[in-house]
Image (cartoon, rainbow, N blue to C red; front, side, top):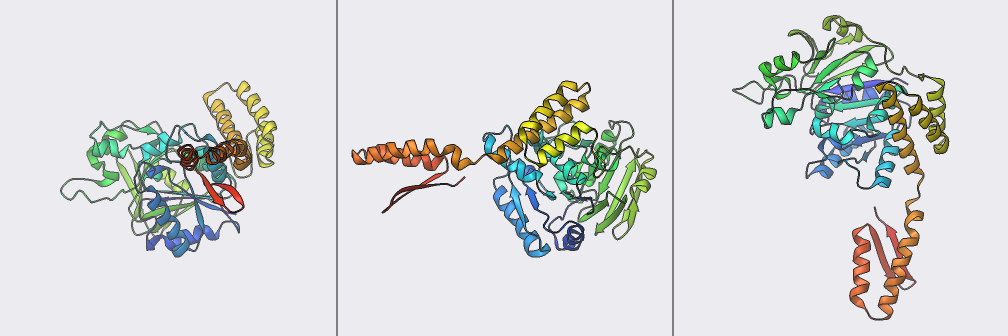
Length: 388
């Protein structure tokens, strides 16, 4: 199985990207589960429609069945549902996210199991495919596009997920829509920043960090095992370091080493190489989570947290706690958990009907419906279904 990080500048569901998507999927294990993560556009009124379009594209154009993992806002209002969604994310071998707002996505994902799930997929032989707004979040730092371009805030970086850095050993800011020309009379290259604002941001970059630009309808497909990178689509990929640029056209192949050389940076050791863990304690944690032994996993996580002496170690302990919560949520039988309460309400509704208190009966039925319980009155009696 090949570990792949695919980053797209835009056009993620266009005809031009069908073949690149298929090539990535061909390298994954048979039966790999694919999920579409809706967080970047979760604030939009047409979020459901965007998700359905994406699932339809991969089904009909690419020939790959996917399902939605919905995580549209934080804080979480339904912990059980959220834990179930995160458990589904963790069992995926292919994760896709696309357009929207990078800052919204990062706020939604902060403190969640999402970053650790992405690292886990890339560690265990899967693929992460991030495009447009989602692509921006992969770097060490992120451009808050809406805030700068639409609101006029002072150019600044946000902390990114650094998925790219942990997977490749390269510290970079990922900038899609590199060759955007929508501005017409004004410069909207570099994801709507333009040259002036990009230069301001470059001066604020952390040491040994460069800008990786990806044109629209273009992508870079990185084989994390071999270190090779294919440029796909219609445009080019650009490495920019201190205003010096090196570009490579679609149809070409480069390597992470060549990218590092042009950026004049060193490749750092990756966080978790394929098939390896950082310590015996984490190896035991991974085994407990794989076997759904949440009690043992929680105990090991507590030990990991007590022993933590650095921010990185505390972050690792926090990510494993999130995984334990997700695993616990996936073990909950929601029907069993809520049955006693629903049956109690239905008994009260039956009593109200027997006493011809129709308003009370209707109020109970409508209240249950509002929280996702569908009540049916039939010849055999009353039945119910938990619809969400």
